[in-house]
Length: 187
Image 1: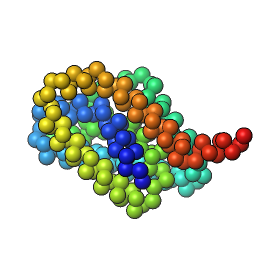
Image 2: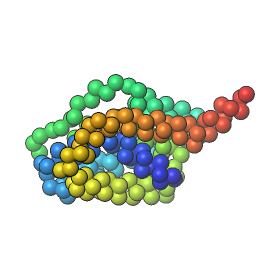
Image 3: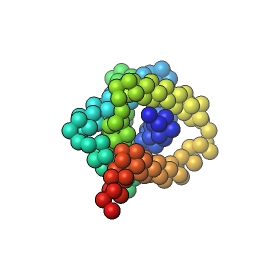
Image 4: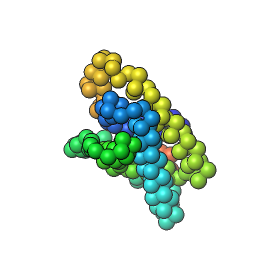
């Protein structure tokens, strides 16, 4: 597994949720936010892996490269999502539900093509890596939450950066799956 791709995928697909983390960290304790976010991330990663494996068992690997269109489509679609913030209930559960409501579709569509070709042992390492990134992100966001220039920069460039990352991930999936080589072999 390409850990740079995993990191880029994780950061770009969760960029919009980083804003939510700013609010969640003001409302709940750091460990509560960490646990809810980690639980949500692990659930969505596991679903992406399982669906990807099911598709890989019935389709040739190069054809799964077509799934690279999902992150590219997300880069160009109009974003109508609301923030999905919920109130009441246990803090960990609230963070978990908020994460799923904000990020489920994007995470599934982005990580599914990235994880489709992974073996179970590599997926285990991927979960550990993404889990560590999840916890690190919460700590970093906690540290920068009160820096005004960071908030202004994310407000101004965050959406564009996220779209560029989605396109790069989609193109990588086209290439890594062998789809581009397969299509070029027709000519």
